[in-house]
Image (cartoon, rainbow, N blue to C red; front, top):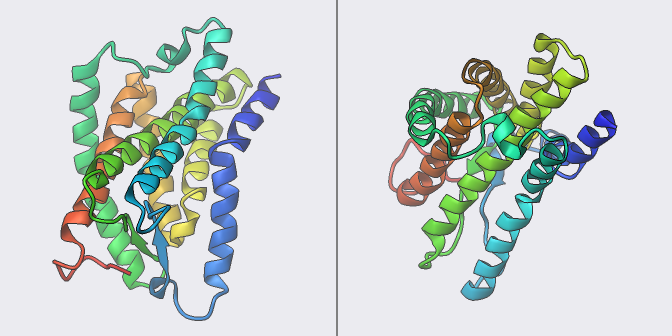
Length: 247
């Protein structure tokens, strides 16, 4: 039952994203031209020229992407484990989570940007366009919500839930770490080799920190901060600085 449950959770969330990213990656590497001449577009308009309809679609996409998180919470509550509290995704230690998360974000965010720029220059990565939303009043709030949603989905499913289930299934700590890190890298393959490697390494670091702290909270905070800076920073700097590729 645990094997079936775990596979189904992944099938409706990041496991499916990994397969989609792999197909996208194959399409990119077999397309004429280099990877850096292609773009991976995130946070795009769903209804160009119709801002209210676009906003409705943006909020729908964010909310529907969080359903697997609710599913994980349900399974953990059903098990009597206390829901998301069992993996440390709660508000019991907000200062700890935010302080540790900010430190991790500062360390990983800067190195991740350098890795991306290097991989793109080497032709191993697509040009990542974090956002191409219209300049409307809800742009920044939606980008922040999108970042928070990404962080919640990835850290709850790939870090807390998956490691818990793999431990219950008898996997060794090393095998579980490898599975979590490779899955994290796989659903970023749509960005290219650099996206895969960078996120797999990040996955290793996050697993080690999660095991040290026993909480998803700090890693959720770190991931959310990294994505907020990436999304909002791109919106503010794109086309204004020469070192930032814009597709």
